[in-house]
Length: 221
Image (cartoon, rainbow, N blue to C red):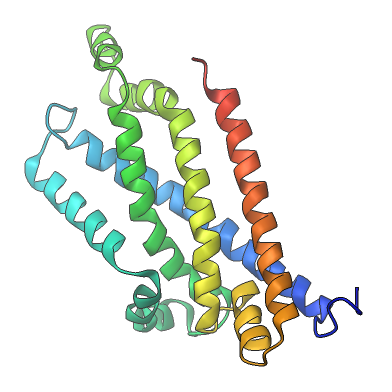
């Protein structure tokens, strides 16, 4: 191993891998919760839905569209004062989390909205006719019916988040991106960059494999 990758310090590489996994896991969990809530708000306040409200729908859509449109590397820079206030530092894995979550949640929210729109309106009408409350419709109809698409969406978002962590590493967030940039690119140690890239690809393949299998099991069609 040392002869193939002479510049790779394996303890540092595994430490960076742990940081990437930590950032991804925390960001995915927070993104799933916030994105689900925002996506539900987008859908429910839309035309013909349970909480139809044109103004609120416009506000939610504007929030989603604005944050989806900002390139992630610029979003990190814009959020530096907020990150410093929240975390107390602009460096490290925890400092990357606000940008990761704020960057990914609107993206996932739009996927949630699309998944909810695919639900047969007849199912919702049937639930209404049986006297179901709005809460029952949301938790017993909308979310269960759209669950395969929700899992598929969070799988895609998780993979995007792995890429975001690599970009965050360039500005000092730690992880494999930081290692590949500082130790690999800046020191012209191509083997370090190569190994970091391979590990990122393995993480992505594992996420995709798990997501595909869970989606397949949930899909009753």
